[in-house]
Length: 436
Ligand SMILES: [Mg+2]
Image (cartoon, rainbow, N blue to C red; front, side, top):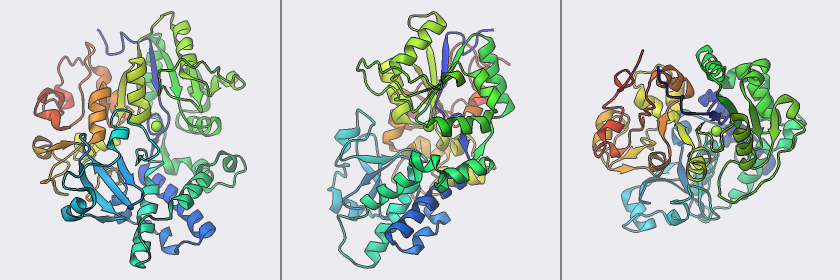
């Protein structure tokens, strides 16, 4: 039987939010509280900042852009149109948006980001669950400043926020065990992350038996990566499974021919620190015996796991987008995760329309009538070969499908142009060429 993986020589994974599936609600709450504690204790901000409630969780939304000077958070469409916005945590009206951004409502720094999907000096966005809690901290501080009717924009909060975030994730703090975030994460990992299921482990083992090279490439430090891999897979299992693990890694984000060698001092564990992707490519070539091996790569960051690997290496890219969960599984009982990946304030991560209401945002009728793809949905459409809510979903559903068909599981508005690309047309059990 032909399988999806037959043409592939190597399969790679990002770590955070890809192989490691965090329990998003406690994970984000813990990050929020860790940053807030620094803000209150180091810089004397209002203690009300420490309270993290469901309304603030609803504010947390993947992909929002920041208009730093005005204190606004923006949901942007693929043409730069500002679909929705909040000033602080308060939704802005159409009139406010027109007054602030003009009738056209174009995000002022859209030109910086539209082709690169990357940060620039003027353009910042919250595209991962490590970063998103910071948007909630900033929104609350802006609310506090506004409530005092102090001088408003430009808000002078960003330096202190940056400083606190740095302290929360600073590597040295981890080493000296003074960092609340890492301390909590490693003391009780079961509170914040899920172990890989037997199905996923068996799937990885089966790939290995079929001669595929498996690798991990991650921004994580060697300590966090190895501790979390020990927890999710077990210390022996991950070392047996993966042919190479690269931590502190630069992901492929440019086409310069840099050849920075890996630091090999950790090589006895099969873990390499740093280095440029070209070194990884050399490894994959020599270990597979293929000059240009076919590589499939999974990751959750559209910016670093999808756009770069597709644009510069032409890897087959699978986007792990948690926000697809409520669309693919509207009846899912995982209420905690749903609370994080859905938002009444912001609507769908993938699409929007003036008629989208909080009740209808995540059903298929909305998809059919939506007016805009979001900027990020467009990134997925343009660069990802498929989009799934989790690796577990891939293992349970997609690996059973033959003939190299990658259904694009992403409900954006191209539904109208290409209905077969939508789950509305092909729910998993009806996908073509399925084999049991
Ligand atoms: Mg990640």
